[in-house]
Length: 509
Ligand SMILES: Nc1ncnc2c1ncn2[C@@H]1O[C@H](COP(=O)(O)OP(=O)(O)OP(=O)(O)O)[C@@H](O)[C@H]1O
Ligand SMILES: [Mg+2]
Image (cartoon, rainbow, N blue to C red; front, side):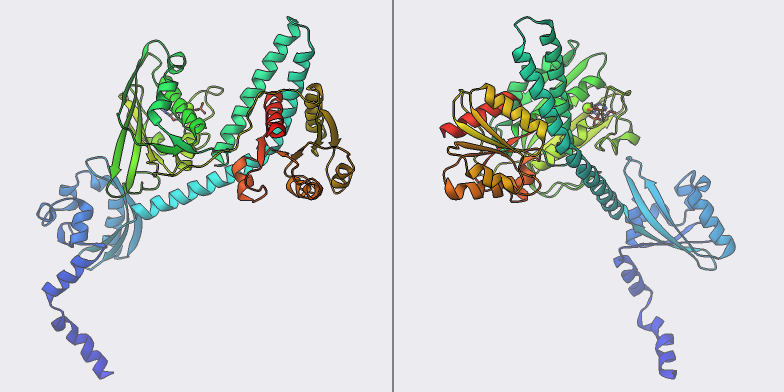
């Protein structure tokens, strides 16, 4: 016991004041001491970094002199209370630097008799990570909901659109009802676009990445953009020559650009300037963003879309990428535009960053990773002129309306069609057919799945072509390994033309 006591009392001589300072300066935590008048007596290096002031500018001064107005803050109330009661306290405090940057600190205040010792821990990053995690969880939940609904919804849309299409074909030319059906079909297209948005949000939209020259894509869009924005809006471009190729889904990228352009237009009700710029960028080290995850080091193609519009209020900036966040009146904005953009950029391995000055305008920067040489992915896409034939086609689909539609479309084109509801008996029924040239089947069905059915039938007819139709997006199916490589998938909703084209291509292939 005596030895122990000796060691304790001998400590100060082992570690003298200069040593102690060195130790304190190595701490990650800021450590500062103020006297009973809140005058700075000591600050370690981390505290100086946290304060972003010279040590000399603080030492000997009171907190009120150093930070005018601080005595009216809740933080200072707490410090006063600690002084008065001698009790320790903790709190989180957001600090705004003169340049507008913010940092979040956890402060631990310990009364020392004569004054206060304050430990400060920078938790900005930790908090950002937590916010990111919450955001990711939120998106995941919405994604699951969206893809669940989208599946059923796509079935219904295919049926509605398909029958409207058929009905239109049965009307004599110039019949007034044809125009009505035309309207209905347009609404179906819009609804299909909405499901696509929801699925993009769920990161499950069918994506067909391929090598792309972003400048070419922009050049194509420039033909439609003027129709989208007002005449009072000037469109300027600066496209870097020798832009690196990227790997992305062209449809997705077009949508991304259009969403940004539409937002820019909406922000400039009285006209202004929309700028679209591209450039090659090499990031030597990861770039920290104010929100979201950092961008990894590497080569990027940078797409910048700027406007001279209203700008975005600072309190909205953090939320604009949230699904359903909108400042537009009901009926004018769904608030999905930017979250879809972010989904598309992330699907291509990229990221979006925003800079905005209220009253001055806004710039969205989209970072898309440079495509590595030699990377390529072949795609399967039904092609060919829909030419009617007299082949025998079996249609297997558990949804009676959808099945009825496919049978009608194929029947009208001249094919001989056998329809089956699916289930365990389907294989036996189809095996009895004397002739079978093509199987059209749903992928996910109760009882027996499309791929399993195809496999059973191919035991007798090894070369039987199969067209799989599915309301599940292509990527999700690939993930679930439901479809073998090289199989053809037709995603719902599809119109009669796409169905006929896919069927013909398989029969002729
Ligand atoms: N260029 C911009 N200038 C000013 N504010 C913008 C700009 N782009 C987006 N915003 C703000 O971000 C919000 C969200 O944008 P987002 O595109 O996600 O949805 P939306 O445009 O409101 O609706 P939607 O795109 O679904 O029709 C907008 O309501 C607007 O407040
Ligand atoms: Mg929008």
